[in-house]
Length: 259
Image (cartoon, rainbow, N blue to C red):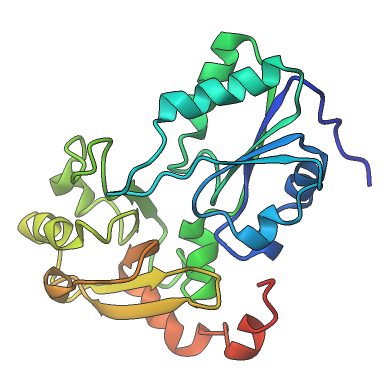
């Protein structure tokens, strides 16, 4: 298969997908086999990292809310330093680098440093993860629009820059990343803005993995939820009703370990 050359001294920002190692793209797998250094996030599967070339240096750069984590600036400096050493640097990020993955920030820093780079998109957990739960993010019978948002800002709090009054009515379906910690507060803001408390709400934890779990409730009841496993994707709107017939991810598939 004809893949682009992974040049020494360059950085590839690659989306690893939502969790199951089999969901990485062919180009992403090619990069994994060619890389001299793999700088990976906390949510990247260890089974996927094990597919790297034996010579590759593996560098953990995971960021998890509420836990000690590398600073974004330090991660970016390391990418630049490795590239300047003439190494093929793979920045392996969960989901898609440009969907709440800070890939844009890292790419801009690489441009400023004069480092060649390539973006390899990945399957976002807000799409692929919901698909594994039998939830289509769009359906002609329910919604022609969907809104994606993050559930926390750089401080770890509820995003202050989000216009919650506008968001509440912007689309029939809202998909929220990293929102479990602040879900009661987010629910309060949406309800205060007039969103229907009877709206369906689903939380999909550990998407695409054998440990995947789905909790279904309503927006009004979400204020009482606690101790939900993370990482998780939250989807608000009518589309979670399709799980009744589209919940295809069964234990037989989970046991094979590749998604």
